[in-house]
Image (cartoon, rainbow, N blue to C red; front, top):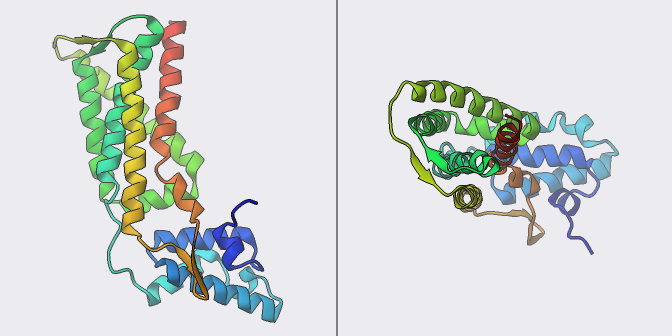
Amino acid sequence: MPRMTAEQRLAPHVDAAWAQRFILEARLLELSGPRIGDALREVDGHCVDSGEDAREAFGDPAEYAASLAELNPPERSSQARTVAPVGVQTLGMMVAFLGAGASAGGRPAEVTAGWAATLALLLIVDLLLAFAADAVLRVVARRPVLSVLAFTGVVVLVALGAWGLGALVDAPALELPPWPVLIAGLAVVAAGAVWGRVVAQRERADPLVDPEDPGPSRDAPERMLFAVLPVVTLLGCVLLAGLELIL
């Protein structure tokens, strides 16, 4: 028998889409698990007693979550908690890109000045995004497909600029076997994604719970937050390999 989701367990009479959006927004606003569970129970009870649906009674789920956050301000900010894991993923992504094209072309993976410049610029972008970490996480969680496209676009633009910069720098290349480089890069990306999830879970060491039955409940929306760079990495590797084969 499949395990019930948080909204099914805590608010079975509330529209699932409304409850999922509320949980996502409340988590991003750093409301505690017990407080979210209590709020869902209140919404569910009101819907049962009044016959109204959640949107009619409580309005937009994001606005309702924001109103609760004003009454229950978080003790700490989540800002920049993902900087180090994302930096690790960025390094792994660049290593994977290095190996992907070389593997498809049957040539050694060459560490050039252009590659090093690309990595440096992307790490600077990661650092700049740290100052808007909460906003970035909200966009990723609310618009995962758009986030993948946006991150891919940033990677492509920065890479083009960095490769142009690298072309002006006369530096010897380090040649490495392509397949181990590709595998190592993908492994580092995966490790960064796992690390990011662990960091987020430790920051929020309070699962969604029913105040009447404090058993843990899954918090599905957060699982997408650290999947963006792995997806971008896979797309980039496929693109680079395809271009290598075509050209």
